Length: 195
Ligand SMILES: C[S@@+](CC[C@H](N)C(=O)[O-])C[C@H]1O[C@@H](n2cnc3c(N)ncnc32)[C@H](O)[C@@H]1O
Image (cartoon, rainbow, N blue to C red; front, side, top):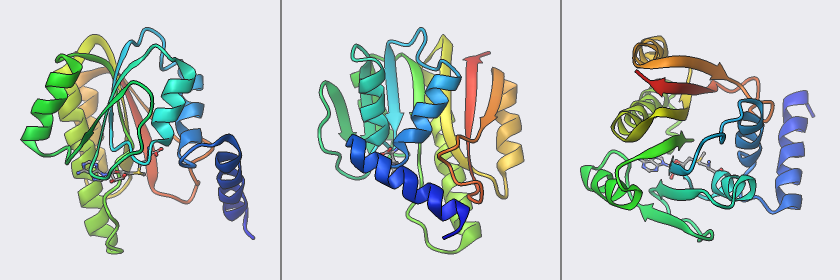
């Protein structure tokens, strides 16, 4: 077994042991801790939340957070989380998000992955569209001190996307948590304070 497989196996076992619905939960835990991401945060919008590993971590780190979560798939309930089953690119879903959040949030999280087709360029393009949609949604809802954390695949269009976010936010970091495999193209963009 290679190092990357061992790491995957480790986080898989840990997720089972701790009752998390996904290995991905550890990525959020690591980022949230390192960047004190929940400081000053009361309201969170989580895009592409199913099966709910990140949502579990949010609840665990701060039980007072108001959370609205959205995914195409169903998500087993989590206490006091308002869940919308729908497509984040659908304008009707956007309306519902506005209703349930009251039109303003302190943090937008997004761990979106399209159903992979196996054709790399197509998968990258579809994932980038989800990351762009995330930032567009964040632009409309974030408070002045707001933050957005979004997964993005580093492929065609990535640099242009990054520049677009840099133009609109005061601080932008690229983050690769230990729980994300080094060999995977995914990276997390953490943007703070819309201009
Ligand atoms: C990697 S999973 C998220 C895992 C989650 N962070 C967790 O810890 O459980 C990616 C999710 O993106 C969702 N997704 C993909 N395209 C979407 C879209 N257009 N609208 C809403 N959700 C979408 C998928 O249904 C899938 O559940």
